[in-house]
Length: 94
Image (cartoon, rainbow, N blue to C red; front, side):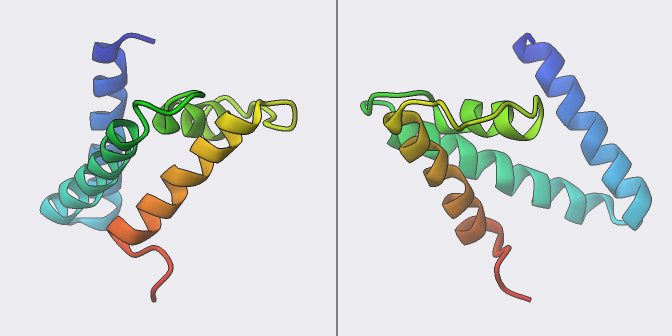
């Protein structure tokens, strides 16, 4: 998938969420915060071995790929992204 296709897909998800909730500004902030958190994970892990955290999350969530046979470095990098999302958009707090 190209960067342009990913960007279009992301914007479609934002518009769908905004349509469902009725709050365009809050939907944009919510998704932008998540994207920024994943980008920061990629920057933080750029010198580590293994895949980029955002790509690993994509492989698990969007393509339903099994992570059972992944390298230890990839599993470690995969753990970084959800933790950053929890901190950034406060998923764990209600």
